[in-house]
Length: 413
Ligand code: HGY
Ligand code: MN
Ligand code: MN
Ligand code: MN
Image (cartoon, rainbow, N blue to C red; front, side):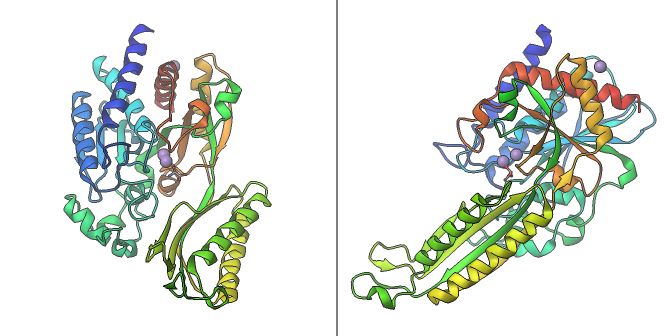
């Protein structure tokens, strides 16, 4: 297994290399259609070409490596994950899901082996939505479910998504973005390797696990508009303080989530204007991320949160606007692909453990196009979306073997 350990070590080293490409000097932040993303794409292209793949970039900035089939093409198996990150990110969220299948293709290439089907590895341009608060921009374009209306969204520097795509060298063409590159019957499925981003596998003392389902996830943008004013002269009873309204709302969100089993709700972004210490905040914008494995519970919770926002606004005479950014239902991984992963894990003489994912993944978007499966890799303390994100080389080696067995089983389909 020495060779495999060396390959797993290479995957870890490549994660380290890619982590250097950041918009920030003191932490890893790599947003959609930025120059660090282009640099990462260029490096990924070189690694893919060296693995005997052809490489192309699509209209939204995804990088796509293809390893041809032997003879008649019995379809294509997709692998992949995202290459963008959150702010102050870890090194493995996303990148691992591109580099593990790439390691498998490198092994095939070294052995001069081709399978009866082609393999494509997708490095998605944006999954986190840090720049435009949207999710799955890259995978939605591949799945042909990209909503062109979001091309008008602007980032903090007032750059529209369409302009960002153009400047990146892409084509923000609505028809292209709404056209899936594949027909369903041309694909064998999509498999994503991803760190668990939770503590379960570590608690079970397991290196890998199979994802059963991915939580429904709704994202909203709220704005609270009150009256700015002088902090020293406006009496408290005459204020319509936008930040106090938002603060009351944020605690209401937390209260509902704490009292609803399985519900998680987060306000992760908050912008206060005008932002001076001696001015009563006149307007506040806030993000809202709400998730649950049961779509009915999720919809009910979001309705409740909407009503609470409106009544707090009324009570305080602060205008509250509520914009839906995206609503994704819970998706379930394909049993037959998950079974191949289970058999592959058994071949490594490991217990098979299935778990639900609270985190969203590109598999959600790809599930609109083809059957999906996910393999989770243990991460230390379940820490993710944080610089302390960490995984073990030996767990990466296991994930490479599992994907190789998985490919073997696909050959027997
Ligand atoms: O937000 C998520 O769950 C994912 O990390 N984008
Ligand atoms: Mn993430
Ligand atoms: Mn991720
Ligand atoms: Mn095998």
